[in-house]
Image (cartoon, rainbow, N blue to C red):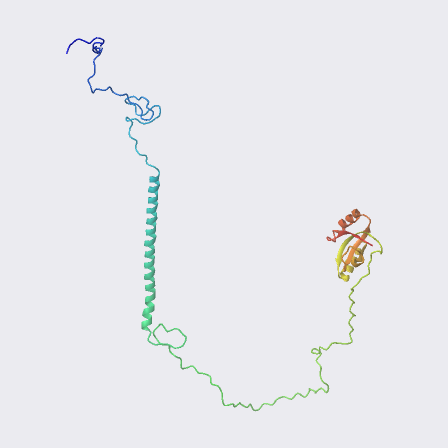
Length: 287
């Protein structure tokens, strides 16, 4: 093979020599530390990223924070322990009271059992048994009264009954004035007053006017008394029959005071009548 270079082919030019020292293969330059979250550059001893605040491998491991649940659990356990202790104390003393009550009842029933074994003499009837053990002694010295069944009587001699010679037997039947309840028919009772069932109307015939009504009733006597009482107080009171006037319900005796041409005048009168007749009211009467 010839060392000559064919025409038109450039000769092989060796690569230029480097200016510096070339690293040996396999040696890589150190990489600058960066944040794993935002890739910001970090100092070698920086524990936290100043940009995003993320911890770096130089940061101290965080100690797990104890929550408040553990405190509440501890308090609950303490409360349960206290409650259990109190319950045990109550049950213990209740058992002591029960034992004391049982002992007391045994002592109380012991004399009754002993007394029941001592009694040897039974008793009859509804009385309670004798708890002394000694049967009662019957008193045989008492004398029981006896009943006289012979039917004989003792005759008293030497006694003479006195004779009343001053008594005269009456010849006419005796009448006790205190027991004679017969009515004396000679005394005349006053005649019964007739019951007034109707009364004449005081309202002028054919007159239409305002009036003050102080009472309305179906009883003629009551209407008359009301009218007389109003007249006694100085009012010009009268009675009209509602059946004789249109616009009024029939069957009533109406006690009224005065006749007025205006409603204002009768209202003033009604205000005065309210003192004695609170139910007074104005009304127009057709003649």
